Length: 393
Image (cartoon, rainbow, N blue to C red; front, side):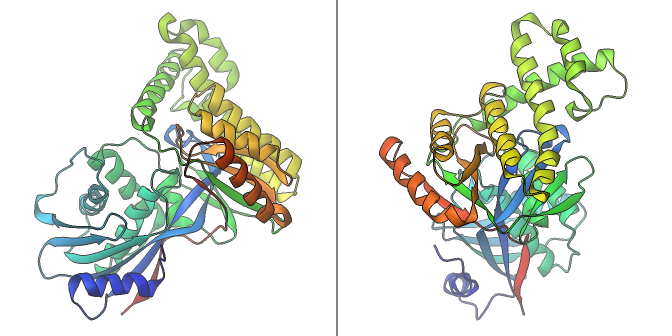
């Protein structure tokens, strides 16, 4: 689906009978190169905003409603800003309403608006389509309301929309990446301080996304189970060690020391989940260093180790993710491959020699279609800028 500014502006004019939108904004998806299930432990991650994106056209209304058209779902909804309360429901327009609610809760004056949405981001593929929607809505409402844009503070509000309004657990990596992306760079994120360090992506290296076509039906409930297991391990460490706030503050020796303290029924699960977080938390900085020195063998080793940890310790992979990453590793030009995002389906990511990336994508796509389930796609992505205003009039 085309997301060109003129297309979403045409959608807006057709839907609302108005001459032109007051603002057109974009918000990218994101791929996490390494560092999964670390952000909600205030850890580190190395994602990049990508060139698949959501675009939104908007203009102010005189009443206190949002009139919202989505060309993705071919639906139009009305959201009353005077009666917003958390729903705990996971419909696309709950993310729109939740973002308006969270901005208002943060003290911003949010007015009514007509909004049209167009996107080429696959939904449920682990590429942060929900964060793109939240941050695009926030970008538009901030532009219309003359609210200063600060990627970190607006990301906090968008995360609150997802956590407290929609009722889905997540860390802040997705929203912060979508808001703070830098073209040509991955972002080394500190999810405690929200510090962002752009890491230049070498021109001879390509990031290839491999969408399995499997959608993540178990992700929400299993996320909570794993988070609870991590909390059990964290509580055990806290009983022995002062100054521990999250698993970010725990090292492997401290975890090993409390292994016997864990409840026998859940001991191994809690230990494995925490062991993944501790090991994974070191990998983003290590990969950033490897990219800086163009040590692609080391970069590939780190990426492969991350997948093994997510598969064996955190247990959030699935047969299709294991299959497509194995196919990738056997294909010429691949340095390493791993699942990306929450898991239980969605996408994987491969680091590939740029000169081989087109052939790599074709070979992996053909092999996966021959062996795997229907659906899915393989494509090379470019690291893009974060959420931005394209047109304002």
